[in-house]
Length: 82
Image 1 (cartoon, rainbow, N blue to C red):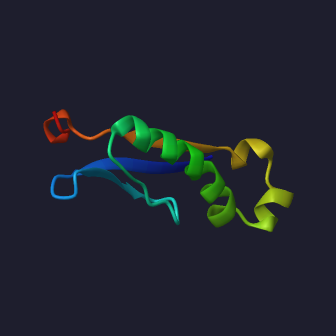
Image 2: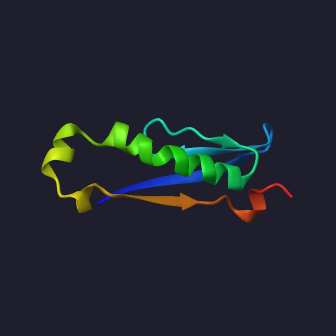
């Protein structure tokens, strides 16, 4: 099983949440955490398919081994704007 991690971090100066992730190509910036999650979930599965799976994976591995898990870490409440 493939596990990926995405963290939302708050940039106080820019006033946006931004991502740290091990998903190649995933770069999210959003004004709200809800918008961040929406964009992340729209982009992450596609980027995993494009950047983390090969033709060989798709043709030789069981489907259960190809389904990714995305672990999302919200920012600490001390770092979220009021």
